[in-house]
Length: 152
Image (tube, rainbow, N blue to C red; front, side, top):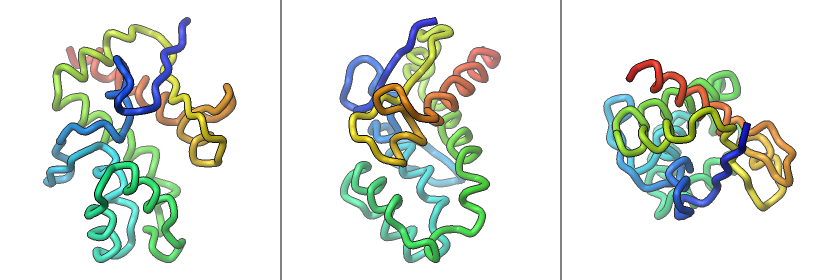
């Protein structure tokens, strides 16, 4: 089985797999500019912190700010729900945009890997760095791909 790697939202053709890819989506009754926004909207404990995150001038700054929240600003159950939330967010993203669903389906049974360049705990959790990491984003994308495949 081949690997398909992605990282930057501007990379062709698979940049759309990045949560930072600019494509509006509806989630939990709201419109978000990216999947990263929809995902991170569930992380803060307080509305003020959520509003601050959502006002970030770019998806990458949103991600950076959200990863730097103090523990008391994070929803108490976040560590238990974050992967499930990511799955629901990604399903919504791909289900709402046929071109993105087609791109995801075009990967067949390839292993999808978020291949980061900076070695840190976040990149090793959501992706891989130098072939090492849990690649949770890739695994969830492969689950979403299978759900979309069954739906069509």
